[in-house]
Length: 462
Figure 1: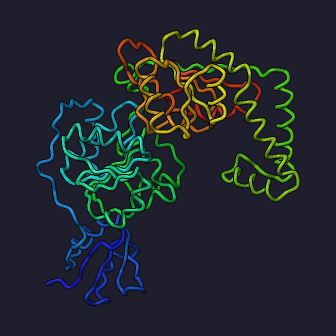
Figure 2 (figure 1 turned 90 degrees about the vertical axis):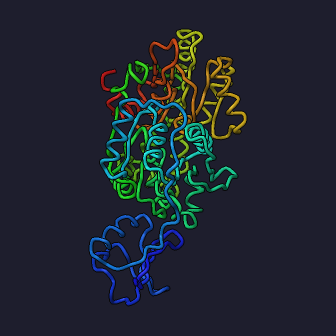
Figure 3 (figure 1 turned 90 degrees about the horizontal axis):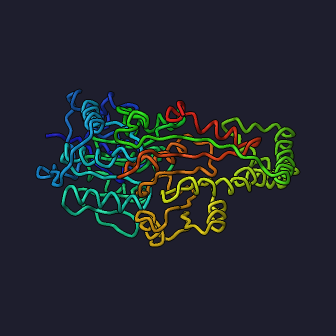
């Protein structure tokens, strides 16, 4: 009888050996000796690889890790006819031994793919989501298709069931207790997962089967490698333009340049000169990886730093929210009477300024859940045809179908720009074409920022 035991302990794997000298050489690099307990310890996410390695080597051990059983009666009980791209994604995931990430545009049915994956495995599943809004949305969808209670972890709920949805934050806090209770780990908006805190949610789970979902997988090399380590290879991707006119609405992208007023131009140049002069004086390159960090350090350390930072903020504010942009917004409203319009800004101040100027509802991260729901419901039924938001509707919220999007201001992030385009691509009765306007202040840093965020195939022919 085996006197070597593999068990789960506080989000890690522990290998207890009857004789420490019997440590399997195949596990060097995966397990490390823990001098506190005298045994060997590894990440929980290495569970599947560890078991395969030990079995292949013929090592005699007792597996005490798993705290779950199959769900043979689990089945989809509500009508579901998958699209071809969803079926192909599921098949690719199966070929990859039920492990990997899938990239599908907003509106292409990532949640339905997850439903199909859970039904295919028939094992306990934990779904990770970044927001409370997504927590409730996922629970609603899973309850509808499986017609069974769904556990919730987060937003004041702590109910662990065979199929559970959790926020990333709550999962990080609880995974040391529940990390061995699920065979399948699904990470929605998985581009968040490589973050310093969130990656613990995946590292502390033993789940042998993993599915990462995102509309935009663009990340730097380090984050890409982390995601691959925790969730597997990117095994299937579909671009927006591949589904255009089929699953998603046909669309146009229009970049409109506006001029600053003479007074705005003079003030912009004055602030810009103060800011760029500070950068040159202290040899700070904003194009480098650590450019922003070095600028902040320089502002705190060097003479003139406070003035340089204030000038940076003011020149950016002028470029993002010039008078002409507000005038052009009014023209766009007149061009699309009666259509649902989403206006995106880079910051809350700009969103509230537009709301005050045109008397429009505004959603930011300050908006209470009940008020946000009321605004979205009114937008859905047409009572509020126009909605203004900063960044909270980029992802993680089931936004009603809109025909027109306006990027009033934004960052240089390709992901953010693609997410905003995705918000107007959901098909709807009578919707012939979606339009995304991008307002850019000519002769300012916004031109460079606009160019950066348009480096995606969804915009190359537009």
